[in-house]
Amino acid sequence: MIKNLTRDSIKIAYILGSARSGSTLIERLLACSSHIQGLGEVIHINELFRENRMCSCGKKISECLYWNKILKDTDTLDFLKVQYPKNTLWDKFKLMIDLYLWKDLNFSENYRDNNIKLFSTFLKLRGKDILIDSSKIPLRFYYLNKIRQLKLYPVHVVRNPLGVVWSYTRNIEHKSLDWKVPSIKKACLDWKRVNKFTEMVLKGCSRRLLVRYEDMCRNPQMELDRIFTYLGIPNVKIDDILPLAPSHMIAGNRMAKKVITEIYDLKSWESGFSEYEKDRIIKYTKKYFQKYKYHNEIN
Ligand SMILES: [Zn+2]
Image (tube, rainbow, N blue to C red; front, side, top):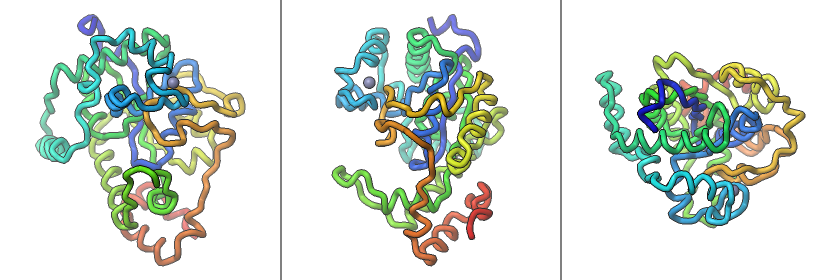
C-alpha cells in the first residue's frame, strides 16, 4: 500500500512551538473544518495505548469508540516506531551535527512506514484532506518532512514569553503529578531553545507560517483566514464553531478536554509578575522576544 502512494499524497499541518503557547487551541479550531482531521500530539501515541490513557473526549482509550475503530485498521502498526524519534539528548545532538554539516539525515524505514500507515488509516477512515499532527517536536517535523509521500505544512505557534513563563511557573496545572516547577530563568531558556530549534528546522522550508497566539486571541477570524488560505482549503466562521466540544485528540493539555465558549488571552502575568521579573524574562528571551515583535506590546 505504501509503495503505491505517490509523492505528496498525504497532507499534514504540523504544529511547532514551545509548550503553553496555545497549540491545542489552534489545532481544535482548525479541526472544525470538514476538510481537516486533528490527531493531536502523535508523539505520545504509544503511551496512549500502552497505559490506556484518557482520550480528550473524557473516556479511557480502551472505551473510546473513535480510537477503537482506528485501532482495528492499524493492527500491524508499531506505535513505538511511529513516535520515534523522541526529543532525547542524543537525537538533538545528532540533528545539530547533521544540520551543521547540511547532511541528509537517514531515518529507518520502520519509522517512515509506520507513520505513513497511521496517517493513511486516518485519511481512509475519516475522509478528510488534511491531518494535523501537533507533536511540536522540531526533530519529528524534520524527519517527516523528508518522507516523500507526505506534504508538510509547518505552522509555528509563538506566544509572548511573559505568558508562557507565567503559565509554567505560576499557573500550575500538574500539581498532583510529578511536576517540578521550573525557575523563571529555566522556563525562559526552554522557550528560547524550542523556538531556536524550530527556526533551525524550518530554515529553507518553502512553506511555513508563523502564528502568534495573541493575534489569534485578538482576532481569531483573521488568523483562521490566514491559516486556511495557507492550507488551501475553505474557511470556517468562528461564530459557527463556538461553543466547541472536546474531540478525540492524543494527549495535549487540559485545554483539550474543555468546552471552548470564547477565545481570549488571560493576561494574568501583567499584574502577576513584578517589574523586576518582567525585565528578567525579557532579558533572557531578548533575541526571539524582538523577532516575534513582542517588544511593541510592552507599555
Ligand atoms: Zn475519544
